[in-house]
Amino acid sequence: MMTLRVNNLGKAYRHYYGRWSRLLEWCLPSAKVRYHLHWALQGIAFDVLPGEAIGIAGMNGAGKSTLLKIIAGTTKPTTGNVEISGRVAALLELGMGFHPEFTGRENAIMAGQLLSYSVDEIKEFLPEIEAFAEIGEAIDQPVRTYSSGMHMRLAFAVATARRPDLLIIDEALSVGDSYFQHKSFSRIRGFRESGTTLLLVSHDRTAIQSICDRVVLLHEGKVIKIGSPEETMDFYHALLSTRDASMIRQEKSAYGKAVTISGGSELSVADINLFDLRGRAIDTVETGEPITLEIKILVNKPVSEVVLGFMIKDRFGQIIYGINSYRLGHAIRDLFPGNLLIGRFQFEMNLGKGNYSISTALSKNESHLSNNYEWRDGGFVFSVLNTKKPDFVGYASLDAELKIQVVPSTDPLPEID
Image (cartoon, rainbow, N blue to C red):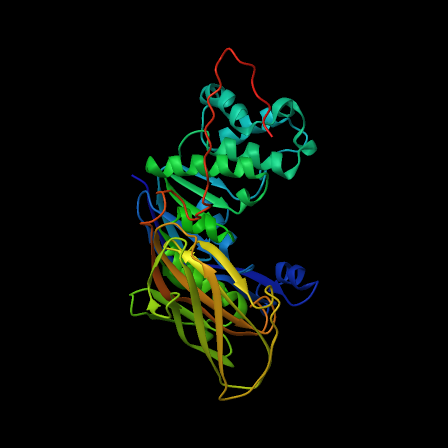
């Protein structure tokens, strides 16, 4: 059974003060210290259960790739250690270890040996690697002629030729065409169902929330949060705009859902409600029912301009729909302390049955990544029922209509407009 435990892990790199400092250190080892330590990772600790999928999230430079390299064994830690058992397959950098002058087939054989497979085993599953990678005759061409997408196809096919106990993936699946991405994630899901443990680094929120059980959030080389995918990715989303974890707070709503709030507090949402056509406040909506989403906002500081928006998310935190005042052509300007801003969005709730949440955004520009006044995830929760329309699957009600025509086999086929 696969076990993985990360114990107080740290990784430091030496930054020398000058161009000759390294040479002087070699020549005069007992002299003064000529460098300072830069800690890429500090105090990293977490356990992974067998068969669990863990996402690793964080901004560029947070230490995600360094952590995975230490776990994969390609980099040694400065402090702490990793306890791991079972067969490990890692997809860290596209084509890492591939020789550009060797063919794809030759590189696949060498990569298989690095994964501890015997030559006979590699020959046995090499046809499967070729079939999955789908790079055709290029398998016998030098790897230097490959595109990044072809690198990824071959590297992924080799790393997953046999189901590993632990599969480590670092952003590699963000490269390539959508067809192969879907194919790769299907294989990953199949491994998960068979008991493979997964460590996944990705900036793709949808990928992490659809695959992972928990998420480890890194910031400046330290773990600042470990939790459910939706709650942790909401925190990460807020961190992208504030860059300061102390400006983010999470609290439980009346529905028991985590509400993530970030921003500069110039504006703050006071209330969120849904109303039906009769003006009644509701939290249960019929599919296709016209509704009004009302957002009340308190103005705490003078604001010259604001963009008001909202997003609807499903119960897994995936974004179903979002819109804002900028995209709808409404300018909101010159607000002063004490003002109450009320925004009302009207639309038909053409969603499938299920539970959803509403997130609100207040920013100076269209994107909240600059001048974020307030971002509130999970501020309102509601349910959608479908008792009046034909039952359907999915999130979108498209009101499809069906026409049937039966053509006698003896008659020529009619022309279809």
